[in-house]
Image (cartoon, rainbow, N blue to C red; front, top):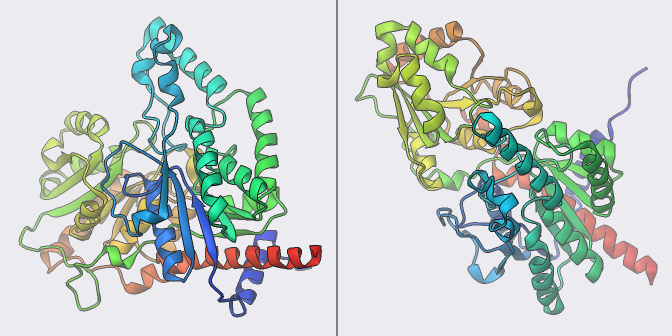
Length: 474
């Protein structure tokens, strides 16, 4: 007997069937997101691109976001007047003068940094370090409900009320993390009788790095069930997470991966729209852009491969751009490959994309923690958009690996010997005229427009269902 479709598969089929008949009348949408360009976080990139996409599709949008002090390095691709930026209360700073918090103040993370998939914080060894670690965890457990951005909630709701008093959207779309954005969207939706959609860049309580006690997990599961249970649609960036939500909630659940924007790559110089790295230098140039968290993503086996290759390994240059030095430099020195490794400071998102296109090979450090198996890093889609071969080391299973291998987009490995053989093959290609770009087929279906079309169709369905319900209500 053939098994029936899963709930998520049924939703996909319904979405495809309705795509041709979806109404094309102008719609209005309010996007609620703690992060938004030009402030540089990976979460801001997705939400900024979604706003750009919806405007291009004819939607009238407004964005409700928080004011930040981080570097304004992202391009703002929608008019600033469409954005309502509010202040927010930094609850960590509220406690920073108190003796309890001052014990671990130096290890308190940047409250505007992307969460929740950051690695845990490091503390000194010994009694002092253990005490600070426990106090740090206690503080977060008792105060960060549901996250450190909870101080934005009253400001967001107040500003949202003012906005909605004179401008009524058809639907609200909230991007999480932080889950505080879901609370804001849920409150605004109930206060103004509007449907809302949850866009999960990462899960809430099912986040792989959820570290609170069981009693809080129990309470927060109930909270998630209540809040997310009231939304009218759920969007996930990973098929595994999409299926998890489909199993937990009787709510339309769709997959819309991060994708890439071809407009971010205007410097293609090949006839097929792909970049051509310079062949003037016969050294093989590997590039990594982003962050490395010690113990969670690890270049060790790559450096071992370089060491084992001897003189040939010296013809390979590995360049890291981002917050990588503490994890990379000591390791390269210890393994004797420091001359082949360069660590650069962080660069703007625009510069990172240009650097990716100029690489011979792009380096992806798959998270080695099994908890991350369901995750597809947003950066992976940027790498695919750059159309350069990808060397992925670390975890060799999961949807990210499936994405790469199914498209012949690179080489996935977890041992130094195989990496060395692959590097030797790329060196030979470089000598023979250069490493060709990935074929266009490797990126088929992965543009932002193609992925975000799933969100738009869900939005149309939600709006249509609300209109029909209002008609029935009379």
